[in-house]
Length: 295
Ligand SMILES: [Zn+2]
Image (cartoon, rainbow, N blue to C red; front, side):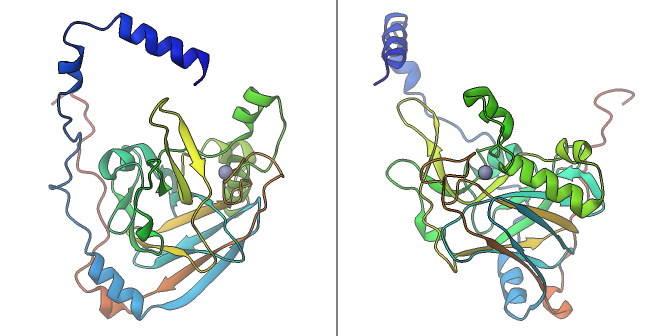
């Protein structure tokens, strides 16, 4: 155990009040029970997927990113090809780059890792489902003995700034830079404008958790194998941008050219219109945005 952790634990014990254990034993409550959320009609989406046709695809090269448009009511498939590889996913409303995926609120609503039936939510003031997960070939993984699981919304994205802070490096193929380049190329906006729109990601196929003793964010070799996939139903018109992380399967390190990396495949599938009967794209959030002024 590191010296500073031992020191911290000793201090914690020394300063503990007489009823410390009683306080620790108070049962937790779920912050955001989701029973009042209208549940996604996953069987409807899955049935529609069965008769859908492939209409577009792009291969994301290793240590690079690519973007694709996914019309509302279509499905986005992300597939591991060639070798174990994790991906960092950003989602934007296709016609409004300010409506972006909100990993923090998605985490608060659905937990640290997402799978079938969970929805990916957009930022304020939009806060509506952007996509719903309908297929996940790694759903069997569950939570491992280390507390690790797959497809997290707890990481941010590997980036050159943290690398510079910790190691003084100038590395240009972190997911943050990959996403920035791909968003700029796909939309025609300038690199600095694209960079500030890149946001915390859904870590597709990545296996992560927090250490029990120190609470630190950890990663471990992804269980993903070629053919594994995750599929999303697009609730609104989406622009999906995916980076094939320079960490490869994230078993050892990222933010360098050391790890073995592989491409990822993004596909768009179009269902038969009749198969989505009853589905409507979700409206913007209903909060009136007065923030208590003039109400
Ligand atoms: Zn990365």
